[in-house]
Image (cartoon, rainbow, N blue to C red; front, side):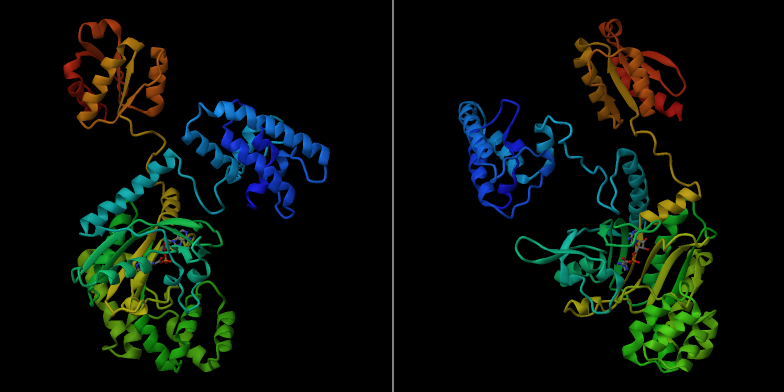
Length: 545
Ligand code: HAM
């Protein structure tokens, strides 16, 4: 009722003559609501002219006018379909400003829309979609090369899937709300919890080892920086059911493969790698109690961003002794796998994992990409072992991709543990990097190969046959749909699309059962029988490179 009372006068003064009675009557009765309502603010106050309860004469005039409109409308309504009535009623009650703008002739009164998408989100115009398709094409192809299968889940999940007590940033950045049924829901900030939910739900029916990938859009209410936005797409690759670091080896290989396929090298990108097992052992060795492990990890994660003094202070504020902090930082900074081996012993599980991954990297051929870094902890609480993060070697961009082992996530959802490892690879930072390196493809032109142009309306039927024949051969064909265009226009049009060929249907040629095939890349032109057009176009495309 509150919403109805906000409908302004301009909504009921349909200037065009298609005013259905049911809407008019609803609007007239709404006037009464408006007069009674003291709280409803007019969402369209800029469209003004609405009568108010404090001006009885104006209000009376308005009611009279509304009644006349309603009476006229009931006549008109005989001819209106229910569907149309419904649509208009939706417009009249939904509070859409567009309706107010359309109906109010006064320029001054028009409400301006914000044409930008919500802050931190993006529109994808065709040119942007071409780039996205190119990127996703790389992701999908590499996933297939590594034997991964695609899955998906809803973008909306139950909020409690993300409520973890570790105080992670991601839980604080949730886009969460209550739905109309009173349920707490959230837009997914990442895919891993949904994946865990899906695995747990069908655990018994699923094979022992899963290699799954997805390309979800994720939502985080982030502070925006270069390459960080409030929505992003994230290529996720996960392997479930493998206890050993063979799974890490394969995940890292896929990560490197996609980047090298895009033209990046180990001089552009490195992958920092560490194991939380090493940190657990190290913290135990310097005397940090188990309950302080998680908050200490959060601080260790800031080692590169926060000055050492400030970091030490923060650690002391956690209740760690000055000497403990000093020994921890001394052990981490500049540490190598060897220094940890010396400190923790050759049989340290974390050290053994890392050594094995480096050995596998030699066989895979990506050892140059890997950098052991004891300060890499990662911000998500569920990682239990290896953690890794792709970074740009100039240090200008934020993490390109990241992941790790999370053997206990199913337990947190009430299931039996199942080993798992995987990574997320965002679409934003990589594009920034490829831009800097000049490795982005040209996405300024369309994918159209052939434009079919009938010179007049009589030739359209034949042109449709030609277009169908070309499409049946798998060619990407744009049919000129406007009639009465000049040939010069058609050439310009095809040029703008960067098509390879223009197939022109001219009266004399069609009369003889022929069409003109113009190779737009090399400028050659030939007249070919309609039955041979597909072959001729294919030859032209092949020859035009
Ligand atoms: P994450 O480190 O939070 O991990 O995100 C993975 C990647 O997603 C980042 O390295 C970055 O490329 C991209 N990303 C994250 N947030 C944003 C943002 N606000 N804007 C643009 N890109 C962003 C996870 O999400 C884990 N669930 C990954 C994973 C999968 N671990 C195991 N399996």
